[in-house]
Amino acid sequence: MEFLDVVRRRKTTNGHFLPDPVSEEHQRLLMEVAGRAPSQLNSQPWRFVIIENRDTIEKVADISGSSMTEAMSNGTFFERYKPYFRFSEQEMEEKRSGMLFDKLPAPLRPFTKQVFTPRGQKLMNTLRVPQTLGEENRRLVAGAPLLLGVMLDRAEYRPGELSSFYSLFSMGAAMENVWLTTVEIGMGIQFVSFPMEVPGQWERIVELLKVPDELELMAVYRMGYLPPEQRRPAIDWSSHQRKLPSQYVYREDAETPQQGWD
Image (cartoon, rainbow, N blue to C red; front, side):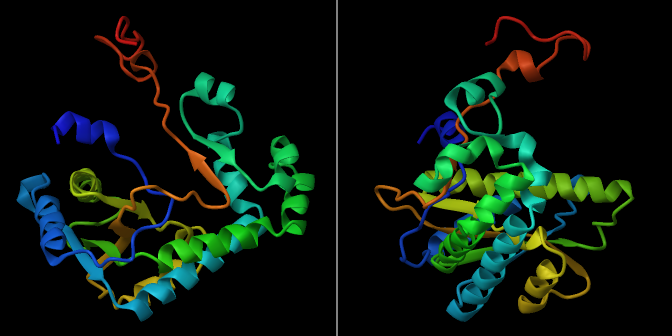
């Protein structure tokens, strides 16, 4: 596959993976490309833990699912991220960012515009939408044949110091290498983020993965091979739109948008 085609096809996998184990060859390849990322002074601050044990994956899935249910039930998730939710193609076309919720349970569709109000939250709780989302999330994580934990060496990752920025930049570059490579080898990947949204839940995963004090667990991803046709979850979204160059590129100074590239 041509490199630029890989970049353009890169996306987050919202749906299920095939149950097939990820081959050792592909695991080694993903770790090799991660290690090829740039880092300040070649410090290579990243560390990775590959998880295939079914019991561990099930426990992470339980933590993730229950975290999603809690965050959705108490409204903190919607309040935090409401600027990024879209409920119509027109709104998505205008904003060219965020996530379009184009697949919702029938009882909820007439009330999408009220989802960020106290009445909307009460309605969602009555319809058990948070439980539906949490259970779907649990199944998605539990169905992954492989989880990837991403850690940073605390000798380099020191929040408040410049080295911390360098470390995060390097980790992002390493994970982008991994992400792009999944496109090339027919795999999908998704950030397991909800345990970070609920106090105390991320610490449970840190303990479960036996992360030592000298490392900081930064992220966990679920990964696997993609089926020929993706089955969409009960509640799903799309995020194909991207901002036009004139919305994020400037010429000569940060007050002059780039023209002619849209």
